[in-house]
Image 1 (tube, rainbow, N blue to C red):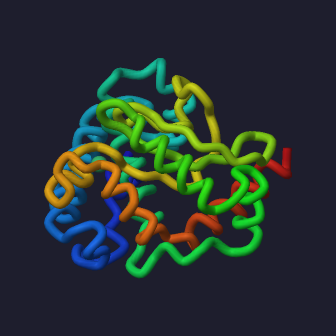
Image 2: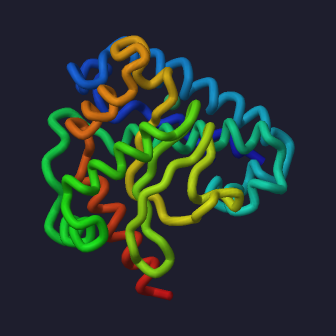
Length: 212
Ligand code: MN3
């Protein structure tokens, strides 16, 4: 059975220098080409010869507590980074479309308040991890953060949800340009958010929750 291409290492959806000056070229080259690629390779190794080779990765995440740590760490690292890249673009940061903006205002009070709380989730994540904007099973938005390469699709997550936006706050995401200044990287991140993509994810998530 050929399952070699089931899990794809997708091309970066923009040039390495596309997010300058907010995310620099060298960081992206190493982050995508070395870190992300290593998670991908190690994930494939971790599932080799197991039933997981035929599963959807999101179904693996649903029962991640039952699988080896290498699957959790590398599967999360593989999936989270793809999701992170697709949520960014050059000349991003244009405010979200109306329906998503309304949901953000309704939940957080304003777009600025959302930014504040999302930033805070990233700044206060101790060590390495991710900040997330998610939708719960009632269709309500929430912000959270996860350690290491965990994500809110995993059964071990404090709060589970549908993923809408993520921000990598591992040092490897910002150290070359920002050194220890994680808050500066976080401020810059808002200039590269691909809100069109987030809005598309939001619409898709709404259909899922409305169908219930
Ligand atoms: Mn990373």
